[in-house]
Image (cartoon, rainbow, N blue to C red; front, side):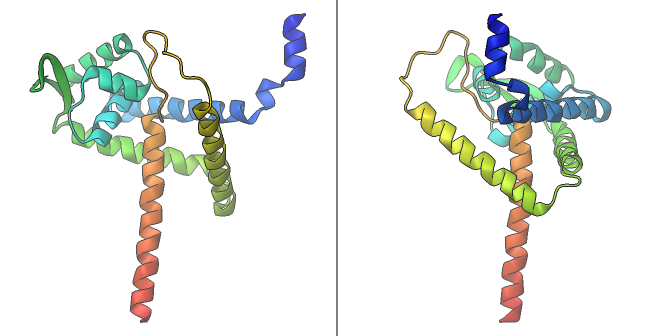
Amino acid sequence: MIRVQIMGKHDFQSSLAFAIKSTSRSFDRAMDIEMRRLAGISGAQSRVIACLAFAKAGLTQKEIADRLGIESPTLVPLVDRLQKLGLVERRSDPADRRSNLVFLTDKAGAVWATIIDSADEIRRHSQKGISAEDLEKAKDVMRKMNANILNYISRLPVEKSPKGDSPVRDSPIVQIQAGLSRRSESRKDENAKGGLNHGS
């Protein structure tokens, strides 16, 4: 009875938040399928590679776990598997010999290129039938919603997170998509400037 009353007050499946979460899961699912098919790794393993690629330096396992928003015990087997595949390596941290830093190997370069290409392909498929104007409107709405939520969070009383909780961050797939968008926008700006210079 209580469940019926609650659902009657709020239709979760018709909410924008549900649509955003569902779309995010679809992106992750598509990426997992592509990574297993093209690179022999899982979507979760590709996120570790993306995290290290964006960092452009070695990270401790705790730092990787925090950036991915997962717990360290969940990360360990992912790193172990990538190390067996020769895609990452652990090195002693010069600042703390008790811990290791995880680095990408040269072999990971080709896999990282595959990750970027796959993310770009998934993005293009996801945007079929959607006008550039609608995409810009959608991104603008998402930015405003995100700003509103962050403002809301900033006014909440700060409490110590439960043990094992990690800060919420954009997933690497989201970072890749954002990076591709920024790269595309940057190229447009460069072309526009080039046209102006040519005209002058």
